[in-house]
Image (tube, rainbow, N blue to C red; front, side):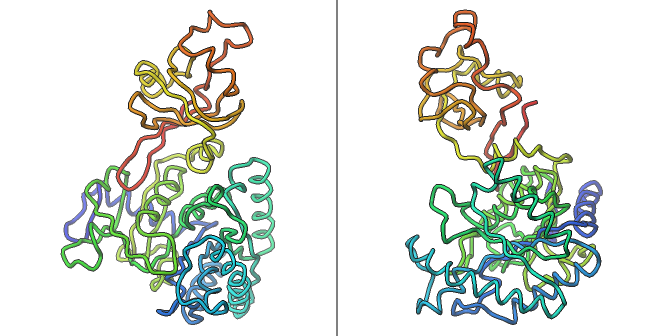
Length: 399
């Protein structure tokens, strides 16, 4: 259930809420994400005072012995003024040009600001390939580990200059959740220009602030109104999606206002700060987290009702007999979406065959196939079930 300021929470939910906040406060490795709107002026340019306030809060947390990874938007916003632009461009090429100019300025601002606390920063630019491809993922993981070992504060952003529509994260909220898993963080803090999650529009007096979320079902009925600024890409729905991604991976989350960063980052943020998201209770394996949240599907396989029941309900492998159609150009080992008879995606998995091999196998029993084709199309160990929930998707590992 959710707990809002308008009513007292039940004892059990207070405990979950307290545990999530305690975990964030006790985290020894922490990912902090801040959006463009929390770092910019009304005109869209970087606001040095706001950036310095954020850095002061991060430096205060590192002084307590916590390793902090900062995921920061703002590169495109920082590039607007130098290019003579008055607002965020709509086309990708101009966005990438602004990011190219702005990324250097943003990094310089952070370097200067952290230097006031005798801290060194390291710039890390990522695309989704860096968390989808195993070799990239491991290399990025080692780089983060080494930076943190040296006491460096990694400042992470999406590599907007080279990212295309096919390899973009979409927003830095999602990037932050995936980075939190990549660096094996103990907690994630999402800083926004909104101070917490509300039941409706934060500007509406009838909306109640929500101080805890224990499960995705608790978000049922929440009216997600995005009041994003003109310089960013992520609204409240993307922040909830990121929170669900992280909590499903066993990482507690605190969503709070950037203006309250000092209290949010202080060990044990008080109950009056932000919204705490409890975890599902266990860490998701890296491979299946990639599959659910980061990997790009190369095709889709349609299942009949019986196969859906077996794969989703009984956690069985997908066999050729339950497949009605396949589409896309995929190879063995690629990620594919599994759809039900209504065309809805119900699972994702690593396929065991090339697309060209499947048509002759559809609807047939394994015993009817050649010996080298008597294996599941998607093994149960290579599946994650997907179901749409309020405020984000949920995941169930197939093991």
